[in-house]
Image (cartoon, protein in one colour):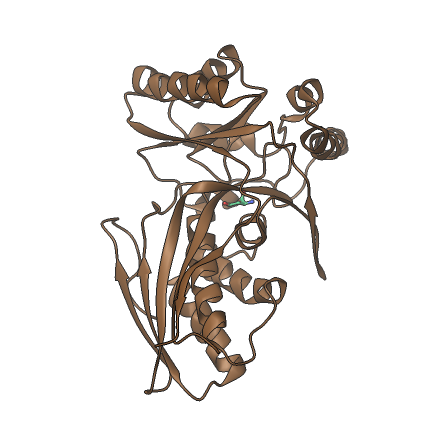
Length: 315
Ligand code: HSE
């Protein structure tokens, strides 16, 4: 029997992972966004947002969750409508895949109510339209791991080709979100249209090496490959204290450290949970000392499930 109401959770993601601009991403366990949706007799979508975060669009046409849900409803024309509440706990403009998490939670919830639902992977093109609405670009390096879990390589955008890859279970992710905002749209416009061939060679070698290093848990290889010669040098300027925070993470034993997505969050990789906690503490301390900025740290193993249904009810 199809559920009449459903609650979904979609996790934060770290995208780019250093060298993999728009091509690499990984899901972590928290933070994340939650959606509660139920069938209603009135057709179309009813939408509301519960949040304490400033800057979350409340308008049904402007919020990515309602936008993506409407796309799905318009595609399937169900005989019922959907009433949806987005519990928006992730900060906007954080570099944690906040817009992707809202879109994914909404898509998975709406889909679960449908009589003939899409497969999880077939939801991705709808979710990417949410990313386009949020920042003008339908990049998939947050949306794919958020939906599918684990590590994802976006091998191609045309046609879309998402390649999940394994990440050694001993590795631990640290992501520290400073209390400042960087909007993805702006952080993309400062990047060059073209890059020198020598930068491209270095970058794609690092992407290949990083995927291999993460899959094998090869610490030395990871250390060498979390290097971004394209976006980080330009985007670092948007993050107060970035250089000091990165130095502190590496000094505390991080295998690598770079900008999470388009920032301002900064991620690092550790070889154990205990080491990850030390690295996270060093990073938050350095944001405070170097830039006088408060930050929130998250430590997580790879989330291999991605978006999930928390509960479903028949009535
Ligand atoms: N790959 C995207 C970017 C991620 O770096 O702009 C945005 O979160």
